[in-house]
Image (cartoon, rainbow, N blue to C red; front, side, top):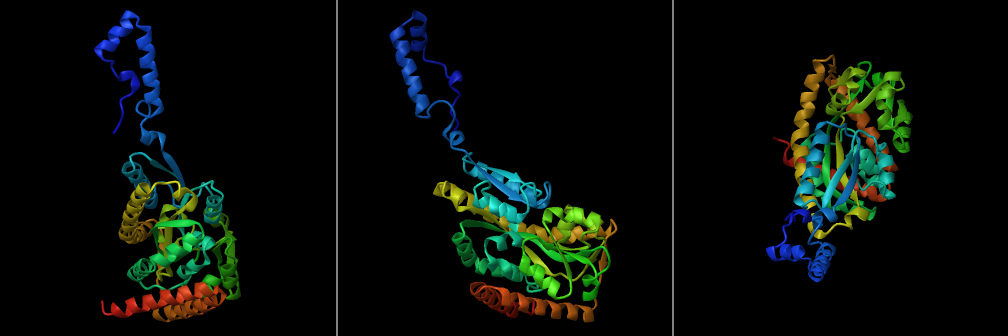
Amino acid sequence: MKNSSPDRVKPPLGTRRAYATGDVKLRGTLVGVALLLVCTGLLGASPADAATTTIKMATLVPQGSVWDRILREMGNRWQEDTNGQVRLTIYAGGVAGDEPDVVRKMRIGQLHAAAISTAGLVSIDPGFQVFQIPMFFASYEELFHVLETLRPDFEARLEAKGYVLLNWGNGGWVHLFSKLPVRELDDLKSQKLFSWAGDESMIQMWRENGFQPIALAATDIHTGLQTGLIEAVPTTPLAALSLQWFRETPYMQNLGLAPLVGATVISHRMWNRLTPEVRSALRAAARETEARLFAEIPEQDSEAVEQMSGRGLTVVEVDDQQETAWRAAAEDFAAVQRKQMAADAKDLLDRVQKIRDTYRAKHSGE
């Protein structure tokens, strides 16, 4: 409930008369009461305004994109559902740095929350590498089932590192975008491939398999494409359209590599400052945001391909024989990646695979 501003409160008739008659003693009493009311919060700013907590969130998603819009709508819900006790400030488009930078800033308290992709999650806990395995998932349904089934496990992993999982994100389905058509593995090996700076094990894996990985921050991809530093980028159609990368990479391979998993996380340091009631409100709005991302992004990803195709993008078709070669390479890649994982990450991967296979067998005829 909003309190009236003190200068709009009309004093009772007797009070006005006392002031008029110059009753100094009564005036002094009234002034004392007014000061007491101000000090106890009954006058002046409302308690909600006085207790407002600003949560600073960073993300790479472009300002004005569908992800940015949905996050800002979540922030509006936070403010509304907590009666103004929480205000969300979003630093979009990478202005706060690349995802590893954002995670570091969360650790030291410069930022409180982040909407990040797998790259950011891996910098928190290497176990999230399970979502970087190419061609591991065959559908969104498989992915969503795994995420929901193992939510407590992933929450526990993040809790152990000082973060709270608010919701899963969805970036779309990753495809290869390139300056020249990519149908066979050798076509990709001949082009300089973006690889996320800081992920040394992944860079080494690409290199050992005959590729040309170029380590860059995600915030430098556009410049890297324009200057020719990189020539191919694994990304989602919606991201390629939103960031206009497709103008420098006019070829998209039709073979999907993997879903781009993301999450919204908040630091324990900030989370512990919030009351249980506020936490509950934030979680509820975040879960609704998750449902929207799962429902809306796949359709918008497909629409992005149509829009780019009308602006010069060529979708490169891979035939059955070439697809078989790609899938065989992906399996080899996954085997090497598993060997490099820590023991607990391997155990997690085995659980993910078991849940995926069970779901896949149950729904194989659909």
